[in-house]
Length: 312
Length: 294
Image 1 (cartoon, each protein chain N blue to C red):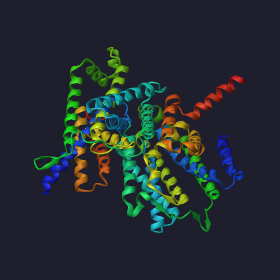
Image 2 (tube, one colour):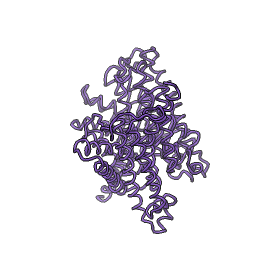
Image 3 (tube, rainbow over the protein chains, first blue to last red):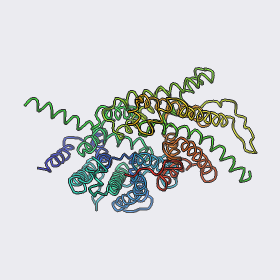
Image 4 (cartoon, helix red, strand yellow):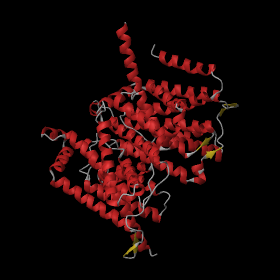
């Protein structure tokens, strides 16, 4: 029975496009699948390691640019490059994480934010490699053997299969020995240390894994959209991913799925406010944090649970 | 130009930008000492200071002194409002949550600024002309002297405030130990509110004096906030002398880096310094001992 929610969710995801034409919403859902990958990783970091990263857009961007430049300019094969990008991004995350995660307090926030700014500047300034501010075009699509993922529908199944895979791995992770250590860490770091958990290493590991997941999503994004520009990888996207985690609720992986889908589709629903989406995101972030510190999803769930109990 | 003169020139101009970093860094430290949080909206205070000054001085044609005072108070009240409306109402008082609220507030303020003042960068005329003054062979803009003079007087005044006045002593007591301060009957909540008010004012001063030298637009806040934060870390987070020293040093290094190496990557340098300091000496230059490692 433990796997029931995951199976139901997979069935719904599988069945959803059957009723849809090859339309705009399919594309929005594909992007949502990528966001789910990033947000699950980020939630492991925020919900369990108790640390915030405002640099996940940079990791996402590193994945995207590595894949784009290596496959397009140098003709590398797509899938090994994706893995390579994940390894390199993980290494970079290690370099940032080791000094900052040792310290008490929220140094990682600023370090990652600063890192995001650096990466963004390099993407713009290193025009000869990255195409500069106008972006990088002509990235080849993904294929396995002779099968090409050329339609939105095929991409939909690929992306969602990967994100459900990551979700199920992460669910397994938090129910494992490491997961219990992570839960102990999130409740009380000093107590966790006293029971012999190496909290420092766990925090660094989670940060590195979440960066690698963001890199994977970035590579897939580059191959899917076939055009990338620095604008997609600014601090604002980092903030969006953090908002998705907070809306879904920290520490709740299902909440992250919900948060990522909701916040990815929100701009499509609120078409009129495109100009002011910074304002809207800031407002949502503040309201959720002030009134629903556990996240929107857990609050709604407990509200439903209590009203349901009263009726019966 | 001989190399030595060039170095002198770069250092001088770096010290002027650096002194605004110092003001921002002090703002970070004051809020950190009162509440323990990193206030992400600090950079937005700087942006708002510049924007209000442009509105009062540039558009409404008020004389400079009242425009300056009005802008500083306007931003200080926004700081107060930020604390009163968002942080105090928050259901969860966990530091993590409060830090994220300031992140939300910062993008919200940025969005509002875009809606009010538009997207284009704006500037102000320098306070007193732009004929450079020669100083040992290096050319200095009069505005740089203004920046330097105002920063020095603000820091001196703040120092007096913390040492001499009752309120200043109360703020130091809260910084030393919030719990003991509360037990001693210090109104901690009022101290926290005051710390946001002061940080807003400091940010505004930095923004006002800096605007004629650079330009200001709705999204300048993030970068300035980060520079101020890097300066605070470099000097020792929470320390006042540290904030000033860190700001000046960062400004000078940045200016030398931009002049001698590459101006495109000028902003990268500040964060490299931040990471290096965190790596080797996280307590900074004037930090008290080493930071507590969990």
